[in-house]
Image (cartoon, rainbow, N blue to C red):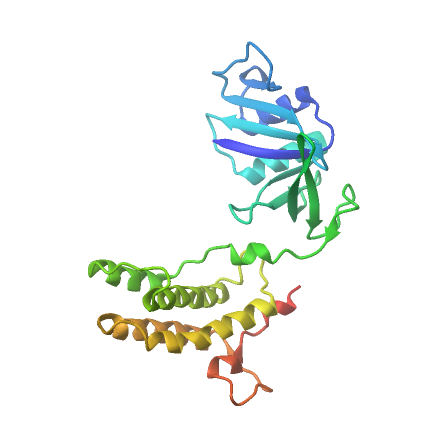
Length: 277
């Protein structure tokens, strides 16, 4: 298994070798740690780690490969951070590309936003923001990072059933047509209900701005339903009704909403997830 890690702090290759031996449960001689231009490496070692210097807030990158075990990325980062007394960064998810987890030597983990900047003929990695203060990075902004929420994909079983129906009838989705818009908005609306059901992953909160955007999107779904091809209109309406029922069950009536708003604007989860942070 391959691990791509970034280090903020000093790198001691001998200490890193000892830490990786512990992580992989192998003797120290089975761990090959070296720079990129090192010759005569043990390419058959069960633990291969190549380190390279990095410019910016980040000091080192590690390209780690384990052949006999597959510990989690967090477990590896936690061991290295504690063993070397450094900060370790690793990708939190595929998108956005700057979304990272930062692990401190004491095991604390916070979200971090890492940006890369061209500085002449080198690329500098800068920790732009952290979710909570990190003493080693006093210049980094302390702020929430809601962009990771939208990129966290949720299961959408109702929409999947509708997709299966389309496939069974050899009906392709064409970008920009009514069926394409309707199906995508149904999926997004269902994702909201699934977030509620599972405690608002990935971080247990949800911005009010996002919630209002979701309700506005639901406004358009009624118009979408009226433009679905007749062969699939009934199935689409049934799928939307199922998702709406789940939404109702997970929300409560709230006061103070304009009477001209649709029923979904008059409901909200309790407690509101935008008050959690």
